[in-house]
Length: 420
Ligand SMILES: [Zn+2]
Image 1 (cartoon, helix red, strand yellow):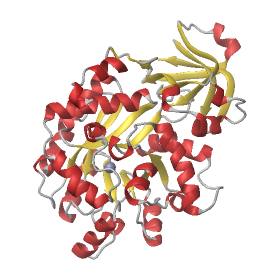
Image 2 (image 1 turned 180 degrees about the vertical axis):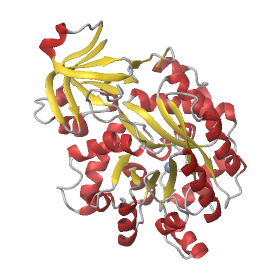
Image 3 (image 1 turned 120 degrees about the horizontal axis):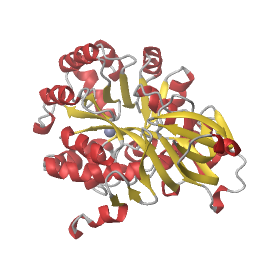
């Protein structure tokens, strides 16, 4: 058995001087550290001053976009997407996607994300990269039929799903229609039927720009959430992303459906200068998860940064400081993501998946350490993560991607000077 020692922090509370026992892919229990000797433990990590967290679930990513980092800075979404990102994406080769996806994923993993939920092109290459790294990955092949985009053909989304269904314990396929304005109602209905027959998760961008809202209205006379309802996909298997322009009526409809909303506060603040109505959704019982979105526009795949921005931006947006508390935001980043993807994870309890993060909090910014939620959300950086465990296996430790067999620096060296 393995053991992690420190202060155990999960959305239900915290326990100081504790040890988390890990047996195979799951957590066997949490015991006071002085009782560790009663168990047959052969590997122990952490100690006084460490924090043990459930793995952070990065519930919306485009990891391969690491290659596009820094392009089209400070533009509004529609121009960023149509003038900069789409033309660059049409140049992709499968080989390049594999290389850059590995880099984006390694960045997310080493900063504490044990799970990603990715939405992109050439999804087979991304899935293979995830396997090399040992990260838990939900991956969908992006599809569109209202935009002429040869690498996003609808049939490829279904084929990718069939190829990867049941193939790997950690890498699981989803269905990934691009957005409500780039996928026709007919195709969205078809995706809904396919997903229902196979118990699949549908991962889609919703209401991320005013252009999207306008186009859906013009084409169908519907709002984006009404469109999803009409297509028969608005329900517990839907992982919707952004929701920046949801009207109060859409917030109610969305909340009633049981769908998850993934909040990517930093990416949308940068592209749209706005914050989604997640506080209103959460008040009505919607499951909220967090995502870094992608290295462009965000610049950094750090789930701690995402928590910090979610906590602060919601306060500014609502002009109230009692919303998006540290404990609540930490719950979105862990349990919220696990619920969205139907994983028994997000809590540190017996029988839960041993997807865990060990933070080295033996640093000045963690003193005096009165409130562990505050330490996690306001004082931790991804670079404070010392060890990451996925499914009970150590996949990252002290700068080394253990499963891949490379250090972060060696990975960096592997990119040609012109690419760095
Ligand atoms: Zn996105």
